[in-house]
Amino acid sequence: MTDIKNSKSLDLNRMDFVTDQTVKWCPGCGDYSILKQTQRILPELGVPKEKFLFISGIGCSSRFPYYINTYGFHTIHGRAAAIASGAKLANPDLSVWIVTGDGDALSIGGNHTIHLLRRNLDINILLFNNRIYGLTKGQYSPTSELGKVTKSTPMGSLDRPFNPTSLALGSHASFVARTIDRNPKHIQSVLKSAYEHRGTSFVEIYQNCVIFNDGAFEDLTNKKILSDNIIQLEHGQPMLFGKNHNLGIHLDGYAPKIINLDKDDNVSIDDILVHDEKDIVIASMLSAFTYHDYFPTPIGIIYAVDEPIYEDLLRDQINTAIEKQGKGDVQALLNSGNIWEVK
Image (cartoon, rainbow, N blue to C red):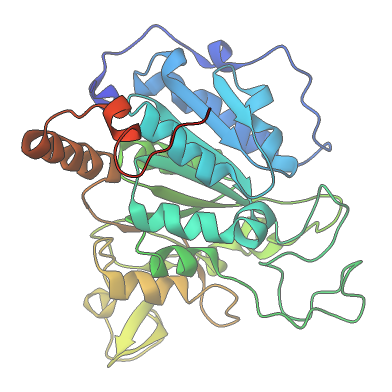
């Protein structure tokens, strides 16, 4: 098996990954930014175009394969993870990417998503989260906030929302990250890290739906207030935020709290919790900040650990079986056991 992650640099640029298809998303949709940043990073990965495979399910995000000049497969609702798993196992040399949405991946496709994550195939999942069903015109989704008023919940949703990063961590994902459509450089950085990770990479991308849920992430994109509402995670660095980086996360026993380095007495930078992307306890705590009115939203790599990948385990298992029992004969197997003759 060729290690495509150690391939040589190729003479490719963004335009090599742009198709002749008219992009049919609403003007101002966050999907445009995600598409552009993906097209920008692919030439830098050193992978031949024919080794990329983009697979999607159903939803606005799932038009992605039409707009990126690689092999692609626009599949059916909720089944992108299952089809991507089959493609990767059939051809481990492929760089497989799943493009999905909060409805596609977490509602009808939820079961497929969690099992892909726990198996840890070397596949990248890009989950566009706009907290609404955009393609079907504005019903609430699995990530819509409690009390969300939509066409299908006119008096407010009674469902507690899924937290995608917590779901991924609970499924034993080996790489969990979050980024935002309005931060192009951050998207590029996270996507490169996701590709470089060997195993299933789960990237939640906050994406604004200008028609049916405009402003869902206003507190994370408004330049006047975003610095007070976002922690940009860096491995080995203290969790600071705020316009002057004077706010930080401190552990008071087991409980996280926010401290102000400028105002709180007897505190220093040494009291700020340092991010460790290999620590599942820290990752779980950070993920729990989602939907929280008090804590800021973490973006960046929340969790990343090295775990055996499914393809390698499967290959080793097959090789062991061959060593013990020989290659086998399919025709002999079909003719074995109880058989009958049709006359």
